[in-house]
Length: 311
Image (cartoon, rainbow, N blue to C red):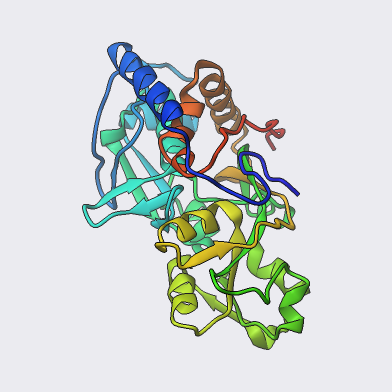
């Protein structure tokens, strides 16, 4: 199965010509957009500038009205996933999820300096939303029925697929079906859909779970596990940052639609977010967000998936 935005076997570097076109476009956009840098609280944001709406108005009592009046927003994301959500040593948070959060916030009239990014590992996302610790979550968050019982989702804004990462010299593991035969120890993250799915292919005693994927990458590097499994875009970032030590099998075996998590039943907020995603897809901001982050490694720019109904 080929996942949107990624070829099935190879993920070569983005061409120089595409990068040059993006920089020219971004420079022109800067003339008409309000450009801000940094952020408050848990991590500083950096990346593609987005145009902030000038004093938008919303119906009283809505989440949008509350956030717009406050002039600030708290967003849950991941801090350990290169290309999607990564907090650097300088405290800045970068990635495609971060750029999507900026687009949504801009529609509220909130510039990126007023966004506080809070680390939300897979197992903590629902709790962070339900307890009001964050206003929304953009964190490689797969939409599924189990999670819909606890939170609502806007989007999806991207579609990924579960894959497997191994050391570059490994020729034994060729796909999920080979894991049990190879008696492979496989690492994933607690509370994630990949951790549940891999149970179909690996005995429970050979599944190793951590709270973040960077620990899985460390365990693979030191030989404590034989493979790491999660969505291909997450693995792509880990492999890219490994200095050539890791590779992807390149055979995705699930479909993972990424959504924006919000409080259960907040239909108005869901509809607002979907409107912002649609607008960004139309005016080019969605493509720029991708090309400035995951697009530095991925060959093609995805299109916005068909948005789901708000409920």
